[in-house]
Image 1 (cartoon, rainbow, N blue to C red):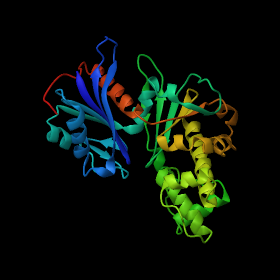
Image 2 (image 1 turned 90 degrees about the vertical axis):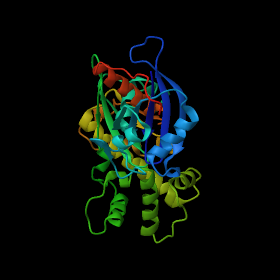
Image 3 (image 1 turned 180 degrees about the vertical axis):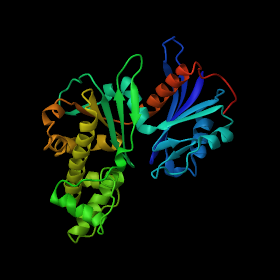
Length: 335
């Protein structure tokens, strides 16, 4: 009845001990323990999970589900933004687990739309009430992720993407200058090199270099804080460019999915930027110059904390997979 659930990103690892709900709710789950770890503090994913197990797990556990940044290929997660390799076969052997299930981290977030993710969101633009139709989850963090949630009976369908690996398309002359600084000889520049936490710092450094200035800030958090305080003009411009580029990227995704059920911009990074995002060109760039502008104007956009939603979504996905296979998590060997 107990299992581990994790949401492993490039910066933080969220881990929980979950239990099948005892009140008889179909697919119901309960969170018994939850912790957030800095991935850089551990030499491997196994070491991170071991820290959680030693601190929080005092019951037999033989099943685990992990939502990870990247795409699952067999027993491995393929992604450049993770701190270390992730292989389900290695974790099974290390902890004596019967099963380690893997899925994409934004796929897990999309499953959380059916739970508390939507309820905790702050409205950014568009209607305040969602329509019927697909929903889209987009999140710049260490990288840039996105997934689509399509409602249906008896279950919704969720589709993971690698949208962050799409080519960055500059809109303004200043964005073209930044792109030329990133790729002076041309070539491929993924949009996540601009629209992400590290991307914000890159944009700031690019703007300073283009204007012949020495960067005075060394982290995305410092750039955000300086922009909010209007303490650094290049930080202010970097955040404005970031928000505008996020608007264009989100609008492009919206045209491919028509998410009349709403768009959720997820992540603590964006939540810390909310006031700046609200005053930015995000909405105009989301709508701008598109033949479907009138339709996109009917798409609600919210900002929500990533928080424990990825863990909750991973657990919901896992319970659904177990139900579809006619199985359920059972007591087993101690982790």
